[in-house]
Length: 139
Image (cartoon, rainbow, N blue to C red; front, side, top):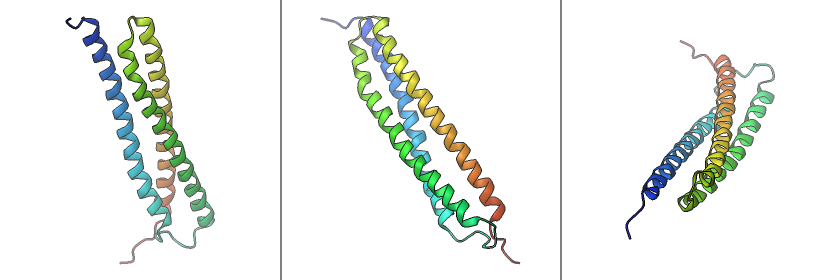
């Protein structure tokens, strides 16, 4: 028995959703690298020691980074669970069945985008603060 036209079409749809999911995971892996850099920066001794509230501010940022790591783990688990479920889309016989998968995909996409936007905001805040209080090298 030959493959119907529906199966190759379904496979293309599933492949597109998997590709987008892999791109999300790639973005989250980049966040990992950025978090390592930020952790090292916040833990270093490159800041002017006489900056008011320096210790408290750095502690706040470190706590926010820790919270961000935990949230990233939740986002990654949601993506992985979604990816595993995409195979069920191949069993769908009509668009109404596909619709549930598309809706879930869009919801996870919104979750990932919100996470990445929040992280970018935190990263910008930390870099703007840190950039202003780095020790100046003496000539």
